[in-house]
Image (spheres, rainbow, N blue to C red):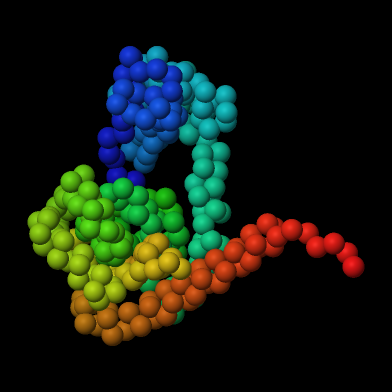
Length: 294
């Protein structure tokens, strides 16, 4: 599921080619516009006309046309009929560049597969992106949410157990910034939308080392999540198990699921530490002066 959200680009006609007024000189406005057009496509807008792309990004129709034609020339977009553009599979290479550059994802899949087999439930790994979480790895046992959720799907942080774990890893100033930007939408009667209560839930997740959320995204869905840590102790991602069984209580989930979820997270934490150590050794070896032969 990719929830529709406004996608904006800095389309100020007075901005120069390298930036927009009020921004640092390094800001490339053209790149921002191109990324905005790519993000304008989602499950509710799989094909866009020039006018639709312009409306969804705040660009002029002429700017949207130039960007879409550039994406077409580069192979990231294609025409369907006379008026519509669609994204091509080449866009996946952008996401793969992220996954392949992060050490966690190279060894996380077998750990997640083992966890799914052990629990018999859908498990995921989610990372923080602004006011949302993004699934970077997900192995479903069966369909959980009423909307399709796959790798790359985005969900709001405030009503998801993985979201609260990710929020618990933020510094105080970062958490304040989240509350300034986020829209706390009520998806069910149980969704926490009071900022003070949500802060308390996030702080509790940090203290306990896990988050349990039930019926806040959809009435029948519950979730339990634990953090995955970087070697420096910062939260890198959240490991989550989703339950499509409203009868499961928090106490039952903590007794039957939490120990195995934590063991899986510990395996990932250990692998991250080993991976970082190997990378450091490789860097040192590459930078060391070559020894002369005896």
